[in-house]
Structure formats: structure tokens, C-alpha cells
Amino acid sequence: MSHDPKAVVEEFLRVIMIPDPDTARSFIAPGARIVFTGGRSMSDIGDCSAFNASRYRWVKKRFERTDVVVGANEEEAVVYNCGTLYGEWPDGTPFAGNRYVDRYVLRHGKIVEMAVWNDSAERMLLNLGLCAPWPLPE
Image 1: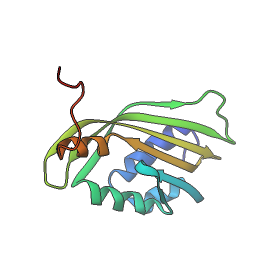
Image 2: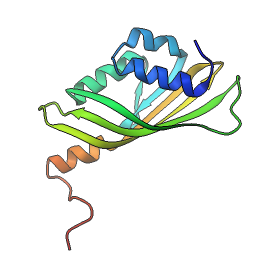
Image 3: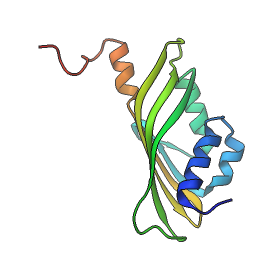
């Protein structure tokens, strides 16, 4: 497995989107800290796939960029991957353009921290009519 932080994160994301949690675990260090949207802590990478299955019929990421923070080295690297989500809501309604940002901390080529943020909750509120679209009508 490559220790290039960008390559590690992008390959991990490719595998987890299959979803293949068993292979994805090979990218994760024991005891890794995983926090999903809404501050949901997860103890295993399989929890991520299960959470996504409860929220979407299916979902994929369209990478816009993967940035390795300056100062990264073999010992530790911080990597941001951002782009948009596309897929279908549980009722089969398609969506696209849902922004996301993921932050990873790698040590010796393994993910030790993973944090995920996206606009899904905001879009769900809008779809349910519980918030106004932006910009607000004049």
C-alpha cells in the first residue's frame, strides 16, 4: 500500500464507496477516531456504510480536490478531500451537488482520524419544507 497521503485517502474513498468495509479497514489504524456529520462517533468503518445505507438509497462522492496540508511527512499528514455527493434519497429521488468536506489524519500511512461534513441534513430539511431555500425570496 502506498504511503502517499493523497493516494491513501483517495483509494480509501474509492473502496468505501463500493462499499467494501472489509478492504477499507486495511486503511484504518486500530483505535481510529471516526466522526460523521452531526458529531456521530463511529467505532468501525463498517458503521459508515451502515449509516449511509440508512440515509441514502445509494451515494457516491465526486472528488473536486484532495489537499495534503503543508508539512506532511511519513510520521503524520493531514489531508482534506472535498467535492460533491450524488445519489438517491431513500425514496428514490435523485440528488447531486451536495457539498462535502472530509478531513483525515494519517500516521505512518494509516488513517487515525476521519471527520466528515456535508449538506445532506440541510437538503433534507429543505425537501421536508422545514427551512426556506437560499437566497430567501424578496
